[in-house]
Length: 127
Image (cartoon, rainbow, N blue to C red; front, side, top):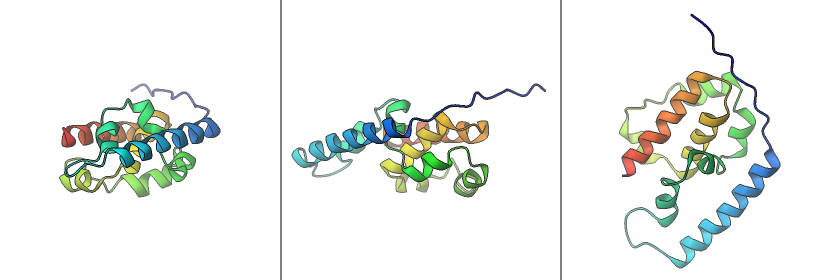
């Protein structure tokens, strides 16, 4: 069985922080002026329609710093059951953004695939 070599990516932390800040301000403004009465808030509705790249910009700094830390990934992702609806019921924008970031940037294929599946399942859950 051939081993697929994963290209190591350089992460531009400054650019991610700036983009996340700008998007957070936009979300706050939208939420302030369009306050939903029931169901999903406007930011959640926007989040599920974003591309994976754009979602990943909302990842927290802990995830960004540990995206290639195998032990951290194991501790945080191994106990999540993809078929358990309670994960998707309790997930917030940051947890989904963290999954998107890992799906795009981790050097560990197992966790990239699992996080991509989590994002896709979350979108289906909210559809």
